[in-house]
Image (cartoon, one colour):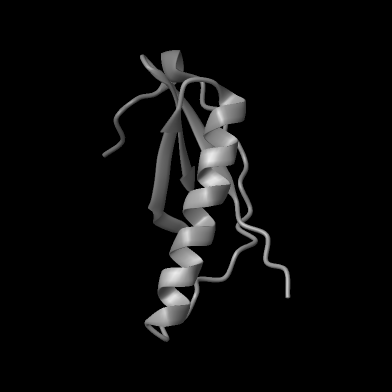
Length: 79
């Protein structure tokens, strides 16, 4: 069975931080985006193995991510 998980990458001072959106505990860092991707895959596999050993339910993947544009210059407090 194949599950697709959603990765979020954030640029940080030391490179990139990667996190699985559906499973926030799966997080890692890499010096560049490619290293971070590989490390995130490894961290995800390790977490799956740990959950399987503990007979815990693995979170479902397939989150939908979209960007939400906001004009910040025109944001006003409402009543």
